[in-house]
Structure formats: structure tokens, C-alpha cells
Length: 122
Image (cartoon, rainbow, N blue to C red; front, side, top):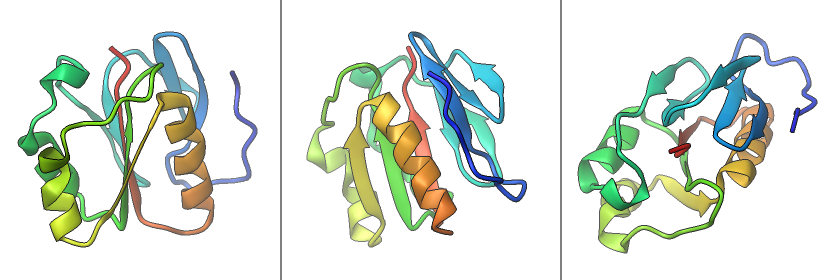
């Protein structure tokens, strides 16, 4: 699905998604990524089952106001202790399927919020 967007002012936005990919700024991404306004990072994780506390500490290191975890085609919740670093630091944390995560990230970016989206593709 292609997303219709307002001008982004040079910030990274999701421009589409589908089975096995998301697009950021029109570029197709077929592996797990972390996206902020300024960065698109490869997220070297084997998948949802491989999530660990270090992954959430990585998100915290990006200093977001809100962190979003996109869990692929299906909404799945990680063990609560994994996200403890974010919660303890007062960072908002939301879990949703990847499609909803892409849309929510774009909305929060449009509102000027400091958001990081960790997106599981594989």
C-alpha cells in the first residue's frame, strides 16, 4: 500500500508497505530497520522471538519521546521486562503490527514528536 504524505521537511517517513517490505522515502526496505527523523538503521535481529533487552536499550539510546515496535503482519507483545529500560526512562512505548506502526510513526512525525520506529519485516 502506498501512503500519501504531506511534505516532510527532510525527515524520514514511511511511504508504503506490503508483504515483506516497507518503503521509507520511496526506498524499499526488506529487512528489519529502525527509523527516526534523521536516521534509517539496519536492525540486525533474527525476528520477534529473538528480541532482547539490548534491542530496547538501543532504542533508548536514540533518545525518542515515543518508541514504536512494529511486530510484522501480526500484533505480538514482547515480554514486559524487555521494554523496562524505555518505561523506566519515561519513554512512551507502543506495540502494533507493522502497517499500523508505519502509519502511527508518520502521524507522530507530522505532529513534530521525536519518535523511533523499530520495524520487524522478517
